[in-house]
Image (cartoon, rainbow, N blue to C red; front, side, top):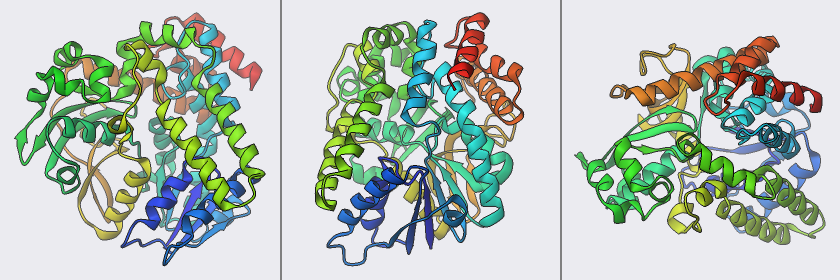
Length: 445
């Protein structure tokens, strides 16, 4: 079975390959990498070479010369591209910040700008998949994952599934805080209800062996303080919500504090990653062999994960991430679990980005939502969920309107839709500000 990774020069690609090597029943017979940056993909291929050393049956890796070669014959396609690179991310962050609104790359105005730039490329990929590998399943990691998956689904239907490691990371950390060990989570003894959009969702039920544990967890200050989301939002606010929010909801619930934290720092997250990755790829290109490249990659990866969501942690009082905070779902593990569930027709339950159907009746059936799904050989089917609270539904409806306007703007090149996407976002406080952001983004493109 052939796995193609688009964005094959991406920094986190070795995590996927390492997971493949650790998979004793792995079905992948070949990994094909494609990237628009030859230097990056060459460096990442060297890291994969080092990972394969000493393995009794390493998965062969090949670098494709173009997109069509990469897609032809693919059974699964992992799409993890970054259109515009980290330089584009910096613009997405800095342009809104100059207008006094948040510029995070998937949330707020920055996410809309990123989506407008990325959606045309993602749809082109979807069209080539439909032409060259119509039987392939596309697993989309590309951010903003919700709107990009929605744009690709207009071409591929249910054969594109979006993934994110934030929801399962939240569920794992909450389960541990509620007294479940990792083995209980992995064996399916832990159940959960999660619903929302990508980077905007809530864990509303958590069971162990069928017994509800979330109310007890919410009532326990010590347990809440033992994991990242508990510290991030605070016990009082979590009890008020009656649910555990995805970490990205910190930008919505504590927008003033988070914006102040971002504006007080000398560099945005994009600027940090741009400097870090440029340094990594420059040093790696001259490192002199797979061993040196791998050690450099491992050090850089750990630094990247330790500084994740640093602005939100600073706004929440500040703390260093510990081993439990760093233990997320792992988007590599989520992707492999999804792939296995499709191939084995297993009925595995995963939190995924899929077409809504009737899960949230107030949304269009084709709208992409992030929720618990049952995965079989036919793909991912969203499971019924309890009705959303008015505050949850209201925020979902508003942000989904933003996402759909951004998709329309990118597909049909409609300025009015782009302005609507920016101006109606809950983190953008003025149509005039939205118009200026849009104009400046066009000037700097």
